[in-house]
Length: 169
Image (cartoon, rainbow, N blue to C red; front, side, top):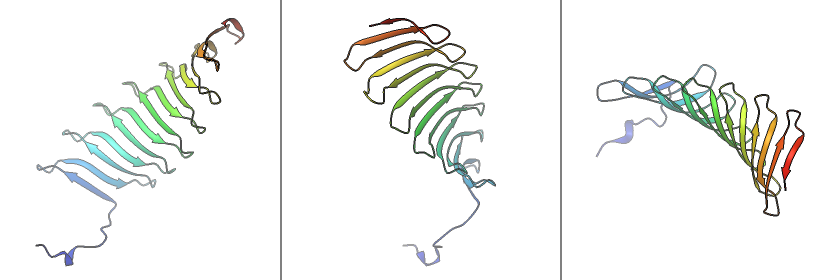
């Protein structure tokens, strides 16, 4: 049995590196100059593919990178306690986001290549009824589909000024 008398109670360092059997770095735990900290995991080429960290503002996150080093997915909990999942395309542009708002309402946003929200799926805060909103390139709601509190479906179309031009019921 090993003698644990010489085992230090605390080990302190600015960075720890995990290496494989060949001495190649496969992960690292450390803090950055700005005060943030992260645990990063690397592939066999030494490229970061995933990281678990805490940003300087205290926001925890898990980030996944593609083989080119672009951030493709981030899971975080905002400073207000709201969880968020954001998905990016191969160019690193945000394309979809799933979040619980501060009041607990879930929302899913679909975002075009220009960074504009084009569709939103959500539940109404008061009635918990589902709805989908579709936006034009200017961010104006052009169509809505949902379930109204009495359980009936509803559909609405708006003109460019946001005025209702047709609805049912």
